[in-house]
Image (cartoon, rainbow, N blue to C red; front, side, top):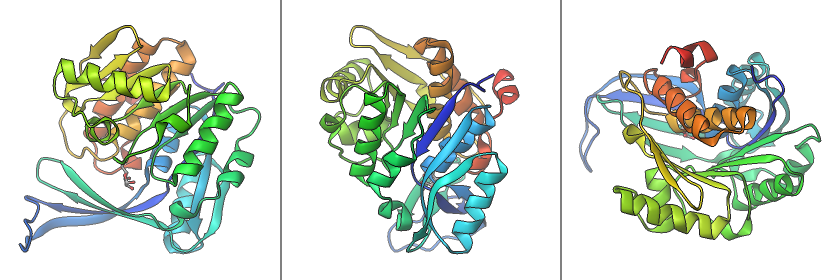
Length: 302
Ligand code: RIB
C-alpha cells in the first residue's frame, strides 16, 4: 500500500530495559518488580520499524556502538527490511533506555543517549538520498542533527514530519516550514509553556507552535483524548480508539509514523490523524516499543 514511499528516519536507536511493577517507588522507597525484559527501542528506530511494517521503504540514519546491544539492534532493523547503511557503528556506547512500567501500563523513561548524541550532522544530510520523499525526525538526537536534516528536506521538497519527543526546549525557529510538527502533551508544555488540557489551551499552544515553526500542520498528541489538528485557520480534534492498555511506550512513535505515511499517501491530513489514532491504539495494547508496531491488517481491525 505504501510501497512508493521512500522514508528516511533520522533518530535514536536504543536498547530498552523494561521493568514491570505494580506501583513505581517513591523517593527512598524499594518496591518489588514483577518482571523485566529487554526490547528494541529508541524513538527513531521505533518510527522506522512502524514505517517498514506498514509497507514503506525505510532508511535508518543514526549511530550505535560496535557492542552487543548495537549489533543486536542493527540485526533487528535489517531483519525488517530497513536499510541500515546510514547508521554509523563507531559510537562510544549504544543508547539505553530504562523503562519503568506500572500496573496501569504507564511508563517513566530514563534515556542514556550514548552514541545517539554523537551523530554527525553533515554525514546525516549526506545519507538522505535523492529518492527520499518522506523524512521523520525526533528530538532524541542533538539539535543540530535535527535542524540540518529538516532544513535539507524542506529545501528539497521532501515531506518532513517532526516528532517532538522527548520533552525539551528546542529552537523551532531554526527550521521554518516543515510539513507536520507533532508534540505530545508534555512536549507541548516544554515547547510552549502551555499544557494542552482544555480546548482553549490546545488552541493557544498550537498557535505558539505554528508561529514559532511556520509548520504547515500542527498535530498535538493528546493520549487517551486522541489528537488535535491545527492548520492555522481551523482547530479540529479526533477522538482516540479504545483498546486494552498494556503498555503506552512508543504509542506516540507509532502514531507519528502512521500519521506521516497516511498523509504522504493520501494528502488528507484529517484522514492521517484518524489513521494515527488507530495505530496508537494498537501500540498501547501490546508490550514493548518497536515490537508493538502494527501492520496494516492490525490497523484495519481497530
Ligand atoms: O518513545 C519510546 C522510546 O523512548 C523507547 O523505545 C525508548 O528507547 C525511548 O527512546
